Structures are given as structure tokens and as C-alpha cells.
Length: 397
Image (cartoon, rainbow, N blue to C red):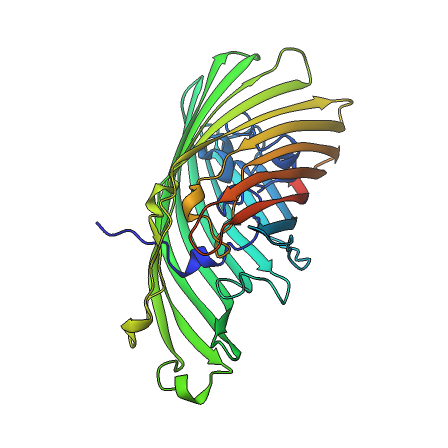
């Protein structure tokens, strides 16, 4: 079966918060703990981290917040000077709500951005004919239900309704002049998620597993060609573009330990199946001669999350964590249209509650280690950093 990474992949031309173009900072509380949340986090943001955990200890819980992702990616072409990007802040928001219908049954709803990236390379970037500016987001609407099947076991399931949007600007090389092409489009997709959480040792050890299915998006949009010389205008006309992309399936497995009162230690191991991304392709149905699929051959990867939360007082909590997240891209297919690197992050956070209200702050500093590309035509080295800031406000009763 032919698998393609279509228009949406081009738009990950900057550093997103996680490897590939995944965004897993859907709660400032989780962000501060390195996103190690599968086994224990039981507020309404569990709609994202583990559907089984929405059956928490509150009748109603609502959280709303935003995450600011500020990347600084650099590219050093072989034998050339280091090039970078313009400052670009990506602000994926999140909103979650859960309601306990009865002692053993809860329902929830989440609206958040699980995939996305924004990027603006400097004007004279050497790879501008592959990617100049980009913006991409997949917005997920996620109704969820959870049930207590045993005193120690909860299960949950949800429906993922995804809306993907994209925009891309690339340079066109006409030898004696330069033009531009502006691509944009959108798509809808459907997926599902299921989770389970179990109490291994009461008040001491819990474990959880959460699965999200792949989601296929069929993008359709328009291509606008600009500054095209007269001799090329017959071939490069404004037209429609389309293509398919399958967002990866994933499995998260975690364990949480409470060795002393008010202290939680958590570990998550996440498997993300990026292997569906075998090639990158933009299809021009009205002018197939412009089709130019590029091999990518991404591979499935594991990423690892360690976190801790300590209640200094009944109201104040402090958090810290570490994330190890390897890149799914082989060196020989790594190009400026979809750059990536291995990531290592350190995290911290604070939470404060007053009555039924609470506020959480989370921060991650992400280091993108040197990754050398051997791709034909654009060999070089990628590296950089990213700052991730999260704020979530909550209410429960």
C-alpha cells in the first residue's frame, strides 16, 4: 500500500514541542512533570493523557489554558555558515471538562492541539526552495467516557474528531529570478482512544496504559504561484492541491509511586508509530507533472518521561521532570522541509489551589542535539533549543 506524508508534513518546518510534530503539553501540571501523566493524573486533562483517569475524585472538573512554544532551530549547510529562523511563538490552547454522572461513571470532553508547528526561516535561507514559512495545526475534539469495572480497575474510551489546517510558502528558483508558491488547505479525520488504569498497591503504586489510533486526513486546498516569469506561466498556474496523511498511532504506558504523603513519582514510556510516513508528496490533480514525492522513511520511536510532584502545603505544589525524545527521521532523508533532531528536556512547575479554583504553571527547556543530514542536495547539521511555557486554570467541585 502506498503511504504518503503529504502537505501537512511540510508545515512542521520548525521545532515542535516533541519529536516529529507532536505536541503533548496539554496541561501545565503535566508539562511541569515532564508529561509523565498516564498512570496518575486524574483531573479533566486526563481526557488527553489517559481516558480511564477522568473518573477522578471530583464531581465536576474544568481546566482551560494555553501553551507557548518558542523554538530556535538552526541549520548549518555543509561548508557554509549557520542559518536560523525568525522568532515565532506557537500558542496551542487546551480546554477540558469532566463530570461524574454516578460513582462508577464519568464523561468528559477535550478540545486541544495534539499536532502542529509554526516556522519562518530567515529571508535568505539557503533552503528556501524547500520551505520558507509554514503554519500547521490539528485541532482535536475528544468526547470521552470512563467506568469503574473493579475497585482497583478503571477503563475509558474516547472519540477523536480532528480538524487539520495548513499553510506553506516556498521559494521558486527560476535561475535568473525567484518566485514563490503559497499553499493552503484543510481536512477532517476520525480516530479513537482507549485507556486503563489499575491500583497495584493501594495508596502506593498505580499503573496505566493508553492507546490512540491513527487518524487519516485527506487535505484539499489551493496553490497560488507568484512572481512567475512569462515563459513559465503556462505551466505554473494557480491550481488545487491535495493528498493524504496518517497521523501516528501511539501507546503510552506509565507507573506512579507515592512513597510518602504528598510526593508522587511518575514514569511514562511512549511508543509513537511514525513509520506511516514513508514519503512526502504534494499532488496537483490538474497538473500531475508538478508531483514530486520525496522519500522520508520515518521510523517508530520510543520516548521517555520522568516526573515528580510534591505538595509543600495543602495549597502549594512544586514539580520537576526530564524528557528523552529521539527523532524519527533517518539522516539520509532529513531536509529543511521537515527538519528534526533528538530532544532532551528538563521541566519544572508550580501549582496553587484556593477553594475550588487552582492555577498551574509549567516550563520546559528543550535541547535539540546535533543531527547531521546526508540528504542529497541539502547536507548539513541541525540543532537548536526550544522554550515551552504552560498556564492552566482549573475549577472543581
